[in-house]
Image (cartoon, rainbow, N blue to C red; front, side, top):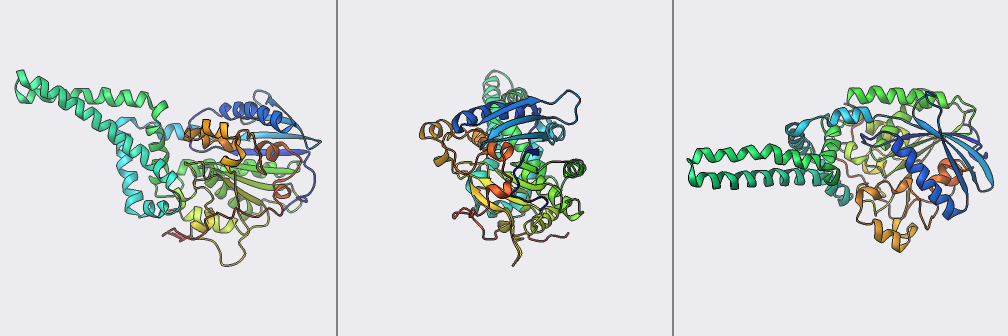
Length: 405
């Protein structure tokens, strides 16, 4: 596991892998700045963030912190794939409805949808939402068109009433422009991206992941005490394959920094349950047995967009009979770590809750994002002796457990 996992961390490299998000990575820097200041005030420590010098490598920031009476410097880097996300979202209205049909066929036809419902209904409802809402939008547009056509047909020949169909594109375009409130197009593109190849990594994403692997490998050669990889949402399953490749290729030195993997709000089953997700299932089976890293998986039942407390290895049907070490499944327990007033404020803001893992808790438990990413303990030391959540789900549910094509 590299340097002793009990050595005090003075210098750390943090790699953050976002989920399917088209937004510029400065969003994550500003989130860290705002929420880190809030958590520092609540918990009684100091966190100071500074920007990287322009042109000084990939996008990221520096953090100087005094936590648990120790001074720590952490360099953050966002592993950006938002350009790939934006390109995949450039579908237009007709293209999006085509995605709707293909995605529904993939998840329903393979039986993945029914098995996912056996785990957690929240993320399945989140997956069905864009399908249903896009159909509602189309229904509204057609209903208005029918009404206009019927009105015109009172005075003119019936066939002229078909002119009412001309209102369909403008109405659908209005809904699309308002998607910042509805999120129907965004979520449809998200689920369609994995479904389009039935779980295989699209070529452009596979190439980017190889670049990410090289970035992390280079950091493991630096004079730092810990390299910490954070994967949020769909970024978690990218991190699984990246780290598996890193270890499989012998790029994690026994004398190097401690290697930690923190998966947050993961949606691994949405991909691993698809028929052609052989690589992901193979990497899950491989990574769960390795002692080169520490893998902690944090979710919360209050997050309706994540497969909360579902062990991604076990439910995917690839856990070995013996030798499974990871992940340590931990609950962020929003109803306990957030005050009643804060929970009441956030409980129906589903997308905001999906990002709560990187935000401040006013009643923090043993999960504190800022202590983990900027404090003096490695991930291994911080969770040493910590048992997994008793309410975790471990029984295999996946129909497709093959790790080779």
